[in-house]
Every structure is written in structure tokens, then in C-alpha cells.
Image (cartoon, rainbow, N blue to C red; front, top):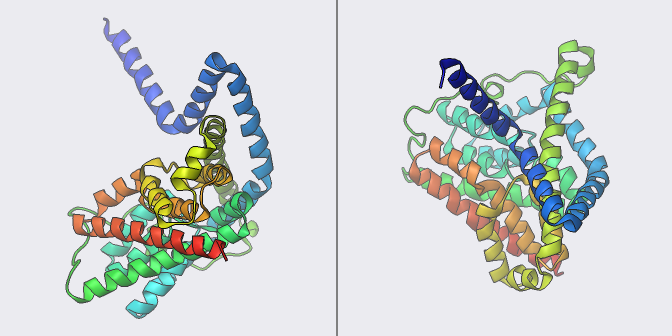
Length: 350
């Protein structure tokens, strides 16, 4: 093989790798639909129609959530999170949990943001409160959850996120007072990354962002980024939901995670870790499962546990902090998610 041929082959391989890295969610959706249309054409057509119909139905909520995310980035409202980490340790835990549950930070920004906070000396108890509540809920997630699962479910999930943060924060606070959990970061972990600058320096929020060309440009850029992110995950979710509805027996779902007892909720909490795809993609899947007999409390525990401990997030946490902190994080997340499911199930039966 000539040197030119080897270079072309390497460039082609690199191009394929970059395409897969950037567009893998779209490619997986297209691959699933393509295989269905070739081998099971009737189901392929049904899945296409199901996906398109659900995307149209969720479009109003999707547009609103995109607007919220773009507005937060353009105005600098996400910088308000820095003000959560001042005051007494108890107050910091409370405020950090609320800030995490309501903040518009994207999932990619949470991990480096946590590194920045810990490297700056912010108490682990407050950081843990924010860390646990932030992946579960944000304004965009609230809008889509309300649209797909109902306003009551969205409010309950928000309260579960905040409650999980408060619970985890106070557990860490009590352990820290006894001298445990000193120096939680792994060696060599710094304070850089997406979202860290908003903690280092509190900047004023520019509510009338449209008056500044740079902020208008950022609004458009953030809106497009959020739109592509949400569309690709929701498309994959609806494709998978169409297969679930077609091939997953409702009786099986009702037996495994139906009913009002703690066992279905425990099962949903456990499977939330490996089965969870993405916060937005999980919503229609849970909606379909509830329609097939899944207990509401099991759906809640699945969403909360999956959001905090999904494999990508867990790997990132493991790389960031020392093992005792990592396992404490997992234990708090799973036990808190189970408790959230039990409480929501009890509420739904009233």
C-alpha cells in the first residue's frame, strides 16, 4: 500500500470516527428505522409514523424549553448559581439544592463545575447538594415533563430533585463534621471546564439581552444547540418507545414494575442506572411504560435514579473524586431515589 493510500485511509477512518462521535444518536435512530424498514417494513412504517406524530405533539413544549435554555445563556442568568455557595454550611446546603433543581446548567457542564467548586474550597456538603439535584431537573426538563407526564408529575420530580439534594448535603455535612471526606478530589483534578467561570466571577444578569448584538447571537446559538440536542434524543426515544409499545407485553410491565408495593419501585430504581439513556429521552419511555401498567412511583424512582447515576455521569464522577466520595454519591442517589418513588406512589394513591 502506497503512502498516499495509507493517508487517505487514515483520513477516511478519522472522518468516520468524528461523524460517529458527533452524530451517533441520529445515526442510531436512522439505523434502527432502516433495519426495520428492510426486515420488518410494517413495523418500520409504524415507528416512523409514531415518531413523527409524537414530535409534532411535543413541539410546543419543545419550543418553550429551547427558548428557556437560550434565554438563560444569553442573559447570563446561569451565573446566579454562584450566589448559592455563600453563608453558613446549613444554608448553603439548602440553597444549593434549590439552585441545582432549578438551574439551567446542561449535563455536560455539571462535572467541571463541581471540580471548580471543590477546588475553590466550597464545602463538599453544599457541592453534593447541587451535584445530586442538578441532573434531575431544570427549567427545560420541567416544561417537557409537564407536557409528557403531567404537571403534577413535573412538580413532584422537582421536589424530589431538591429533596435528594438536601438529603445528600446533610448526610455529607454530618460526616464531614466527624473529620471524614477530607480532600475529596482525585490528584491532578483542577478547576477548569464549562460553567466554571460563572462561579469564579459573579456577573450581572442582562435581562434585556436583545440590545446587545453579541448576546443576540448567543441566544440564537444556544437555541440551535438546545434544539438539536433535544430533537436527536427525543427522536431516538420515540423510536424506542414505538418498539416498546409493539413488542413489550403490557402484562410483563404490570407484573415487574406495577402495583403499589416497594418491590416495583426498588426494581425501577435498580434498572434506572443501566437502562437510562438521557433525561429527555427517558420521559416518553416512562410515559409509555406508565401507560402499560408501570406504577407512578416506579416511574419517578427510575427517572430520578437514572438522572443522577446513569453510566456516563457515574464514570465522570468516578474520574473526578476519590472512591469513598463516589460510593457515597451512589448510595445517597439510589436510596434517595427509592424514597422519592415511595413518597410519590403514596401521594398518587390519595
